[in-house]
Length: 362
Image (cartoon, rainbow, N blue to C red):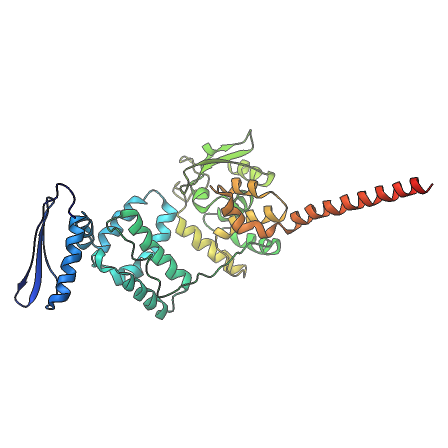
């Protein structure tokens, strides 16, 4: 049933051997080829188009036929331009997507095409986690720009991928090997960056954008805002972090950044990653990324019995369940102290009972 106020003048006809259709509504006039000589198939295509036009969905779908993958990605990266580390990470996943999807209109990026892309990348010997990052970029672009009603990545389930789950934190022995290798790297800043991160749990972006105006030496704390949540949080500074910042404050940059390159700008995220990767390799530490420093901070707190709520607040997680999912299994010793209390209660009750028996018998 047509929506009230919507006019239609519809028709299916042949042009040469191929069937075409015309649909006219109060929005526009649609004239499309069905792409087939089969009348029955053409009628089905025409019926679907007619339904979409009557329900007002055709013109939404029409945008996916006119906009290309390249246009969508251009707008998407403009939207995330302010999130530097996020943008740089996603730019690294873009080239392989462009090899396959560049030039295609969005309606041609089907779930089958996405699965074929996964298959191609697997044939290229790309790691599952790498391919996942690439298709997640594609999915997030579709969800963000919304030039197409459905998301083909969400429905691409033929080729299953499994990311390698690496929960990696730094042992104290590895830390002793790593720190000497970080010296004289990244304009002599890498060592201090690593030590500060291990003692504050800041994200890479927070570390690189940290300014002196965010440090409160009197209250022994720093305040930061994560771009993911846009919520400010205050992090207390322990003695190690505080002394490090006091030492660096003797010479402050004009730009106000705590860690700067040779021309008073903040360090580039990609250069930080390269310098850190080199130091890790020289220290002969495997499967350890810069983000693992933040994971080490939280893991050490959890293993020392710090409650999950406190760890969650220090990390800036919006939901404590996120923290629990990653760190709850580290609370064995803390839980052990809990059950040990029962044993002391049991022992107290036993002693009381024995004393009562003595009184009665006497």
